[in-house]
Image (tube, helix red, strand yellow):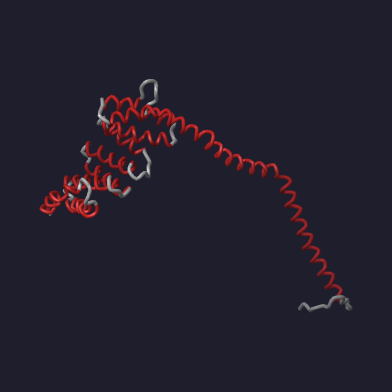
Length: 254
């Protein structure tokens, strides 16, 4: 058993002297081990400092590369893409007004007067916000040209959280499926458009479209629920003026 020893205590017996020697030896061994460990750690850093510096440099290059890409490549690309898209967007807007719309929708897709069309923007500036927006315009152009498969493809590639544009793109996919007589898929996308963003313009419009397709699919309870929503939540909408007759018709089927 270890005993407490006062400062300045000197061992008297042989046995006590041996104990002191052992304790000093153990302490020295501990310090030697610590010194040896520190030396090995220092030696490891010296031997591997090139790798450490290289790793730090690589991380710095990644960070700087990302910032540089964003500043010197992504931003200029986006600006250039938007400038290139100006004429195609103008064709699209003119087509919407109804003046020679088919040819203008085609020009908005393929370009004209030496300028890019939406398909060129998607191809040349992929990954930019401009290319994403070009997917929307391309999809809507194809929808108006009655090329419903391409409309579904390009609108499906468009990503937006915008309060109006997002639901319109989703609902337009529903329109394309309905034109292809794929009514179940059309209903699915109308329902997605309703859920995408609640507003007084697109929500009652797609509730009505969903109700009409549900009636066609003989999903009358679902149709009634959608019509009731229009009646209670969007009573001042254009669609609300049509719900009374439709509600009566659906209730008669139930």
